[in-house]
Length: 296
Image 1 (cartoon, rainbow, N blue to C red):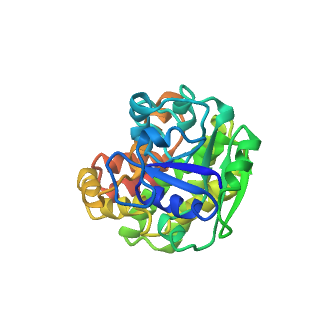
Image 2 (image 1 turned 90 degrees about the horizontal axis):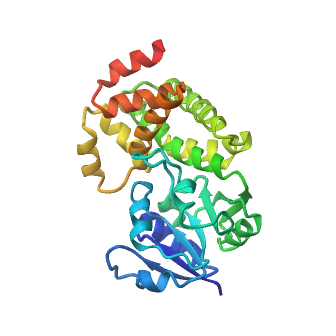
């Protein structure tokens, strides 16, 4: 059996460990020791040929700088988002440490809680190295149907942007705006993320497939989504600091919203949903933001 190391023992890391353990010999590590199956040190994990990294995007630059040593490992990145401080995508962050032929990126609709129950879903493994995509795809169990793609940028944009739209959808739900509004928001959110992705050369099919529409529809329609719950909190008048404290876990959409706002300013991009999510995270009354959005 192929040995695979999971870096990050949060909900998603544990779910991936559960899934991959059905066909591989899986080991896992995290910043703090955990009493779980096959928990080993980071030093031991980094000796393995295949790694899956679930560290949140806002933490990955410092983690790589402080901890990572490249020894020709093959890496599957299972995080989604854009770094708020730099506006960099994950593939840009990893580029300083791992060559393109050694790295792949996971995308598609996949709530950790449902993966842990072996409920069926479909995902995409994205890499410029098609052989590597196929290899990582082969590690997943039968209840997870896998596809492969070379559109790393499209997967990255979709995986990051859908979290911002999910915050907006949570606000829509929390304000009681109705199903018409929710459907309108999500569909226009798909248009907005596609428009943004085209600036970076992303392929159309990534946005109408699992990485885009699939993950967006999931994340923007359920309280199982942390980002959707951020939106619910905003609708209740809570500050982002209070919301994050109550969540007790990372909601990548917050940092990504700030990154998108800065990118939009620099590149003069029309991103109305991301703009209003930013304004509300900064304290603007959601009803005022709604009026601004409808008038824009």
